[in-house]
Image 1 (cartoon, rainbow, N blue to C red):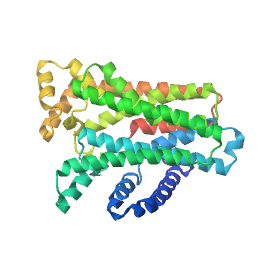
Image 2: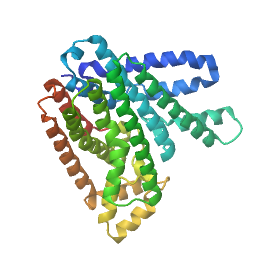
Image 3: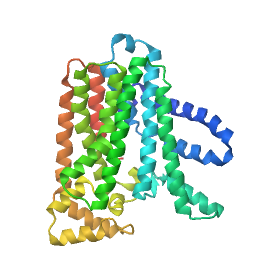
Image 4: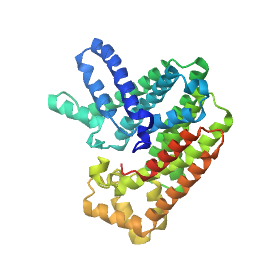
Length: 362
């Protein structure tokens, strides 16, 4: 197996080829509109250049885990599956762009977030109106464009109709769950956070299902797999998706900026009501509670204040609790791969992917 399970079957480079080829096709259409819209394509190209490709990986290996011999032996079928899996990168692009607008994030993967790029372009050209409003509007449209392109890339695959209709049914559910999860996240910020249970509900619908469970289900649908495979993928995908997001929450507070591409403690400045914060709030004493209320969500939070909040998260046991929970969820996920109907080679890659998703540094 390659050094990273994400590179098994040369998948990352194959996904990049699909993304690049599709964007080249869209460039012809956009060029017909005029050069003024070229920044839209440039922004998407930058965002979708590289990356972990987790969602395509889970989709592809979900298919490999359940596919019958005739599908596995057909190179055209496999390439169509890679194309279908690659469509998830555009859905992810939509989610990231809109999420950065809602969170007011400055950066994404070490570069200015899309709405900041367009705001800077507005200022540089000294156009009329507010630069920030222009940037947010352009980013919303860009996210919508990515969502449209995700549909187009999926629906234009050469998969058999039964495989494609099954995949599209799962895809439709996944989009609804994702947007509902995004709303739940907004709601939690507006409410000022709440219980650990509510924070975990956000994790499940905003991240866990569309990152792992539903991509696996799309792969299973392409394979026209029996219900037992879907059930195993749910048993694997939901706990692993939750563990993946919990790791993201930890990195948002304790991650190395040079690795994550985000400023130190960026989630604290944004005031994200994560499971990590919910646990800290539940266990904090009066002094710690006051400091959380005063500092969490302060966009001008200094590094000393970040250190104070980090200490509170550690001293309340919130970090240790979250790390233990990640481990428990990981074990539960891997146990669900014991289904004898799963292709053992695919199950081995899914096991490696589970470890990679929960031990990552970015």
